[in-house]
Image 1 (cartoon, helix red, strand yellow):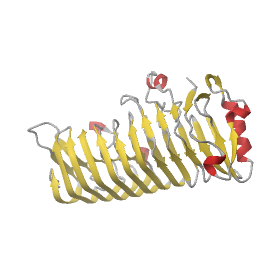
Image 2 (image 1 turned 120 degrees about the vertical axis):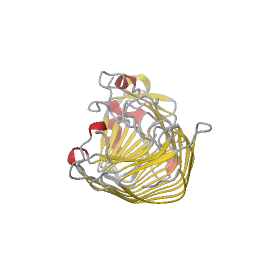
Image 3 (image 1 turned 90 degrees about the vertical axis):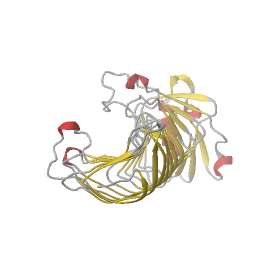
Image 4 (image 1 turned 45 degrees about the horizontal axis):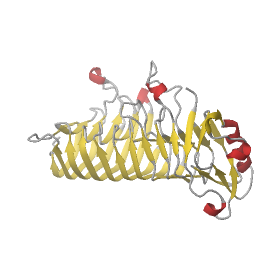
Amino acid sequence: MAELLLSFLIICAGLMEFGNSVGVDVTSFGAVGDGKTDDSKAFLKAWEEICGASGIQTLQIPNGKNFLLQPLVFKGPCKSTIYVEDTWIKFHGVDNLVFEGSGQIDGRGEPWWNAAKPKDDTNRPTSLAFQSCNNLQARGFTSINSPRNHISISNCIKATVQKVNMIAPDESPNTDGVDIAGSNEIHILDSHIGTGDDCVAINGGCTDIVIKNVECGPGHGLSIGSLGRNGKRETVERVRVQSCTFTRTDNGARIKTWPGGSGYVKDVVYEDITLMETKNPIVIDQYYGCGSNCQEGNSAVEISDVKFIGFRGTSAKEEAIKLECSGVKGCDGIVFDQVNIQSAAQGKETRATCKNARVMCQNTTPFVKC
């Protein structure tokens, strides 16, 4: 179960691709790529070579091979600017990293999903993790069947994930597409994410997040949170979600916070959103995780200045908009404009519910009254 198969189809490696870069081929360090041999040590040896060298370096992974790897951490800082062509692999403290290629990362996650406690994340690896990596670019590849998150970005400044496919069965637990935490200036662009959990999850400590032209489905939608669990203080601000599509997802645009937490979510805009049989198109839930026996507590994560503009499409449920806000803090400055959500069932109508929110609503179906 502690193995990851990386199946790469790399186009044009090395000097031709990156000009003055110096190429280091993992096979020259003993990697076999037959899908059976453990190539972990060879990958680490190749990494040490390029990390310690000067100039622009390229980690080359040859065409048409399947590399079997144990969980790996590629550590920085490095002397060089590094390109990785087309991870159970973590990049830590590596700045100016370019991770690209037309390859496929197969996480073989089914043994973890079917474990006795499938939602216990303690021992389930993320396929590709970037930690404390500034000025990151990740693009062009496909990640399938991750045991847990497909891509994690934590404590990074300036990262772009573009033209990436992330795929897992809709019943696979906690297989988020992109999970972002403690990071600033992160862009998720032009990608398809169909998994068993959030397409993108924005956690505490995030600012200036842009998600644009992302096709989401199946999955749990695009979530801010959950935030504030066990009384924790967490903040998220300046999030822009533009020109995205939710197809048969459990949720569309969702913000979720735990009672008793503190901090804030503010300055969030969802704009130009297409819905196709989405079960819960718009959700703000400040009672997340506590069910019917929820205790209000003495504090809550504040939610303010959130705009839903230009939504269109269908809801799989009658309740298309749900604002379940806390009696402690409530939700302030919630705006609906040019929202038209119809029922996916012929002859049915949609409705909105609202609790403890201050709302401005215009040109919206269903109309939100609070």
